[in-house]
Length: 275
Length: 139
Image (cartoon, rainbow over the protein chains, first blue to last red):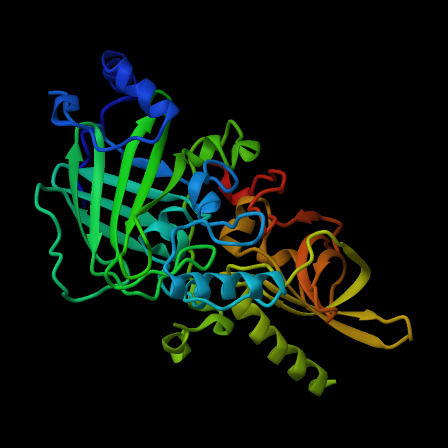
């Protein structure tokens, strides 16, 4: 059984926010960037433990915008030519009503970012040396050690969610990930390679009621320059399911979700030909 | 009749795999309503439920429609139960049809044989269903 995390209460967090008002204002009006060492308060880092969701249609700031397309249908993510062709092919198929099957559609893992930004809630359990993500979607788990080391960047054993290490930049949790498979394209048909360097940042906003989530995607094999996807993570009881909330039901109830239980969705080997 | 359902099932298998995350094959601007639709199959499984109904065509013959909806994990949260629909039931279904003109679509609303009104979460947006508290969810 996991030990109960020493969570910083919203009230305590609010006090720390007030002390760092200038920092908060910056975060509220623009994406956060790497905090300097001076930003790091002496207080314990915030605790992100709890139930969160990236509400559909809300806070999909740049995965949609930069992962979307311009008025003339061109991708605005700085894609290299092959990646641009891949994305346009994907979007043309969508426009025709003949979408391309991806690994997510085959109940295979969608990658760290798409898992966070999925349509279903997830639970964060934070401990001093480890942060655990428990996703309702397919009941998946990602466990990331917290330390000062960066993940090994040399080619190693690739994995669906890659090799991750978390660290603190002041009150921002940063997760560095490398060595992912290339077969987890982002929404909008945005591909990546095995050389993807993913940097995810989590920071409380709105007085601790929400998390600003930012994913920086660096991949010289697919992108001309790094680009950023952002979202706002909220308590599912106050966002997506707000209209469903009743006095009797204050806490989101996780349910079993086994994607592959339907024989129609069972994993096959054709994913290898997708790329 | 068996041949019809075999063909229908084959089509559903192809369509369902595509539909897990993209819903581009459906026309969410259109709605089709079938009353007294005969339930031929009702598959209550994640990641999407599946429903095969038989409805009379304009020519007076029977047509099979293959429908999918959100998954049980979502639907239980908004009041659906596996037992709300049974094979042999006569139900009313409102659906968004496929853009290709074939007899398939995604469920928008169901009026069960017992008169229960169920709404599906909009697969395109993840929103739209009104809260109906599940009976097993009172905590």
